[in-house]
Length: 101
Image 1 (spheres, rainbow, N blue to C red):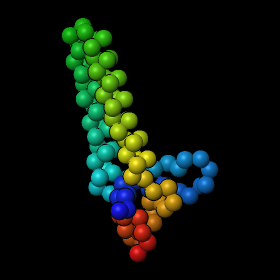
Image 2: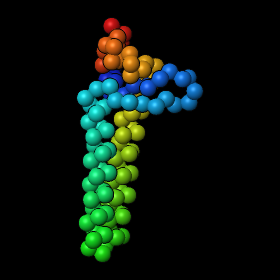
Image 3: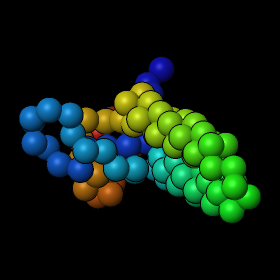
Image 4: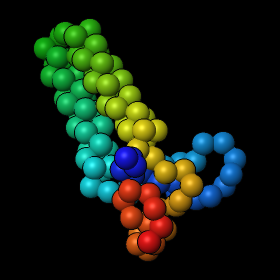
């Protein structure tokens, strides 16, 4: 069974790990999850800060930021294609399972 590709390299540099960008609906949902974690963490920090409970707000923000970032990094690593670029996926030369069509 082939893995589904959610992220692809932005360019083919050949040096180090490539920067990844979403190429499917699932990839964008992962990015959205990260953004939601950051917003909820920021709002909790603001809410608890206004109630003079900064320690709880900071703790919640840190936990949510780490959880969101970890999920994003895991998904980009587990469902990322470092051999093909986003432009190739957008040109429909590569299907979501990673084989050239």
